[in-house]
Length: 165
Image (cartoon, rainbow, N blue to C red; front, side):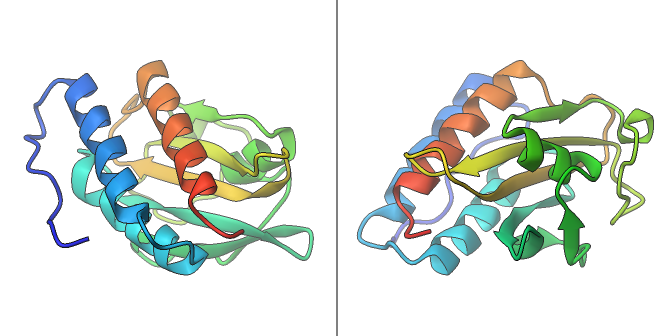
């Protein structure tokens, strides 16, 4: 992709931010199926376009647990057991988990003490096979809402369709 990230003001309407995110992801995926390359670019895109994030990335299913993959942010927890924390719960239950206050989530794993809210979307193949999760953290309480969850589920589905995982 020869163009840069879209210029979206942090105070732009949420719909515009989500539309720019999806449009740019589609452009990034054209002609490239390598999972590492696409996940790395996707994490940079999320961090560059979505306001108020302090971590954006992926955990991939390996050997029965989640292992950190491409991400943007501070160093992360390397391995997370299925069913543990927000990421492990989203993976085990194969559903998006939106947490307004991570300190109120039973068993939350604090990789970055600045994180206050979290949104985790499972990464599923077209056949429904779990390959990992997309994890977004914010230093703000209640940063994410149902519109974010819906847009990021679309983002994850498009990403999965464009990757060889």
